[in-house]
Image (cartoon, rainbow over all chains, first blue to last red; front, top):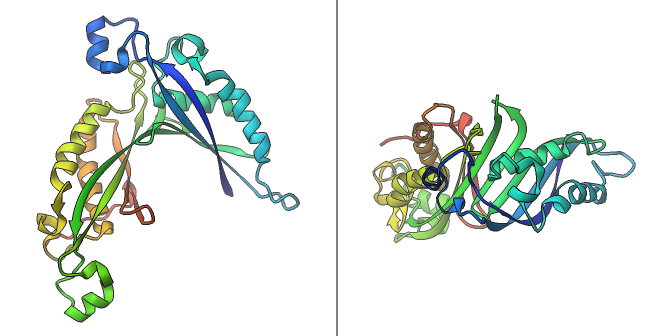
Length: 137
Length: 152
């Protein structure tokens, strides 16, 4: 099994608020991330897939195809959008880095031919990132 | 059931160290450690990457309350190692040489003990520690491969 990673970037706005909570509680739990109009990041997405090397092409997966899948399934939906207001999975789920990793996993699972989705890593900033391997706890 | 995710945060501190094993001769230390054995030591900007694992809280969307993790890192890591000589640290002042391998062992021990205390539900645990000594040298310790520091 060889693992192959492709990166993509998107720039989005988000905020952290629970609509069932008071302003004070949102402020206490989420701090400045609760500011009502949101703020933004340049996110870096790393998608790692695992598979066997095709003896003819030498590829695990066609990287151009993987790029197109990331563009279609994720970047075209998230880039230059407000995640809370414009992306359906975050209508009632807080778009934390952890939840974005899970949501991207769910968007990509089963869509990459000849390879198994292994890891979705989302960097919100250089010093902060979340990994999801499809596990439940 | 909630998704199990891994959250990583990077911290930086600057410290000096000198690699010199008390049980080796002057010549053996020079041969083993080279310029890292120079008598007055040298320093690095260390980057410590802490990865914790746990279920995503369905209400907050978080694996860990990041300000709490940051406060733990400040108290146990930054305040202890930033702008100091690691050879003066109690753990590294004897047989346990302050190599970055050994630093990784000590940092893993700290976070393995402290990370579970950040989560009232008791489901949060340390997954791995990675330390970058320079852009070219890095050390990874998965928390289930842990070893104990040699306390002198």
